[in-house]
Image (cartoon, rainbow, N blue to C red; front, side, top):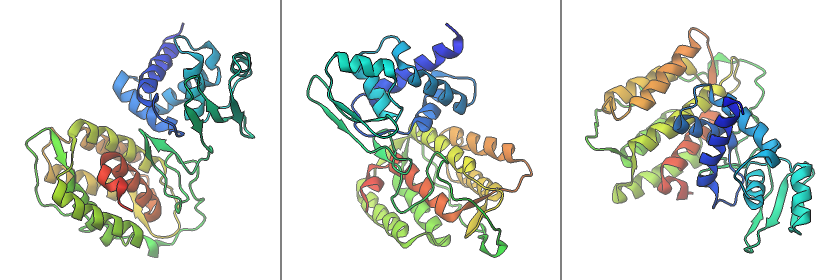
Length: 311
């Protein structure tokens, strides 16, 4: 068996132990990003994603998984049911139903657990948290990005003083989310993000001022890494509507992290910011305010239960 196949099977095992209790379609590309970090996969995350997808498309050959676990994997990652697995399900008299693309939209296990979902690009989950807002048109995986047709420089936002630079280093192993979301609230206000988003940020600030919700720095860095790469992946050479210069945005984020937090605690976040900035070089790319808002909302929902519950 090839090393690539071993890596994809290792990644699937790593992922399945963490999604085995989930009952909604999860975002496979983000899970591939996460698995790459955890299992030490050396190639780009997208290569691991493709390898995992190929294994799931021929899941009947995947070793060490029960029929129920294979069906659950296909359901969770919206992968069409193969003929071989369909024959096994029929042989075992399973109750299941498929959509027009042969994806499992309903099935019940021997224990009576019911799985039911409508598979769409616009509604995905990651680690059990819903990612996409129904009012946004851009998906976190880049599949639903609006096509940029015109460039209007008058819509490009000025990044000057977007972030506050007050030093707030933490000496422990966790990030106090109240300080972080306070920065998000100010950021959203200065960039004139949607009223709904700004209201959500204000509510989260108030609630967190009383709860002191924290997140381990390791989790913060991992989630930040995934979301920042998603932002750069969804940037455009030409962007219509209000937008930001991506290179300048990355520089602002890097400066803010360096000035506001200890280097060791934010080393992962700072490292990926520098890495993505270096990839851009002198290429001018832009990110729309609406897309950036979607990404920030997704990241904060993963980091903070309080944020996810604020509506």
